[in-house]
Every structure is written in structure tokens, then in C-alpha cells.
Length: 164
Ligand SMILES: [Zn+2]
Image 1 (cartoon, rainbow, N blue to C red):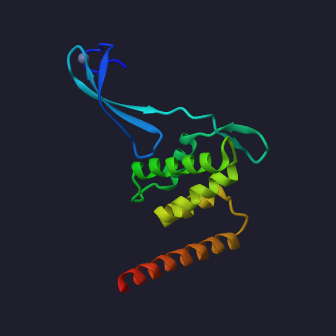
Image 2 (image 1 turned 135 degrees about the horizontal axis):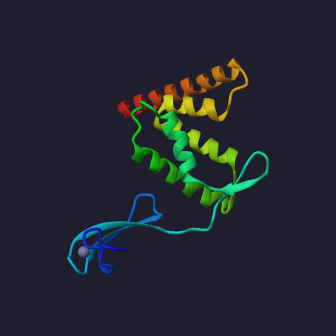
Image 3 (image 1 turned 90 degrees about the vertical axis):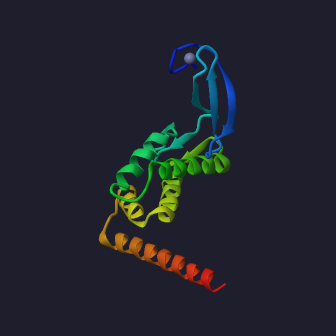
């Protein structure tokens, strides 16, 4: 890891801590030549995670693929890139814990939708409409009904919190 200021190749670690996603180590380093301080993020390489697609072929789990899909759905919505990064990290962790090395693309799609439903309803509907590629209007109505129920459920639990 070269110093970003003077390019010297040796640095010492001043501080080291785990980032929020649990898979990344954040390190404060100090250049041994010019003493400039900089931060590095090191990802812990886990076993490759394979996604089984609908046609039965497999591909590597890709954070970028989910990221792109969610960013498109979240356009002009109050969803930050940190929100999305954290969301993907949670999904990756869930999948690795529950499915080890192989998981179907359907499971991942459903996990993304669960997360988005909690994060932002509009983003959720947009993502779902692309992901599920609705066959007809009935399916959209059904989805909207589910969201309405979710939102009502949330409001109800908020009310309950206030009364207690
Ligand atoms: Zn330096």
C-alpha cells in the first residue's frame, strides 16, 4: 500500500477497526517516510458465492449488479448510497449465513425486496415492477395492497409505541 502523498511503499498501522458491514477492516496508516496519515479499507475475502439463475446456470454473486438495480429504482428518492451499501452488505451476510456457497437468484431478489420495503416504499415498487416483470395489472394491484398493509401495520405499531 503506497503512501498517497509521497508514494513510499512502507506504512505502519496506527488504528484498525471493523467497518459496519463486518467484512471490511478500516485501517489508519502512517507513512514511514513523510508521516502522512491515510485510511485503507480491506475486504476479507470469503469463499466465492454462486448465484443460480432461472435457466440453471451459475454466476458469481455481484454486489455491483444489485447496486445498479437498486440505484436505478431509487432515483430521486431520499435513499443514500450508504443506505444502499449497507442494504447489500446485510443481504450478502444473510445469504452467506443461510445458504453457504450457492443461492438462487429468486432468493436474492426477494431479500432485496424485503430490505427495500423497509427502506422506501416507492423504491420498492419500482424495483419489484422490474424484478417481477408483472404479467398483468392484477399483480400490480396485489403488490400495492401488500404495501398498503405494510404501511398500515407500521403506523399501527408506531401508535402502540406511543401509548406505552
Ligand atoms: Zn509518504
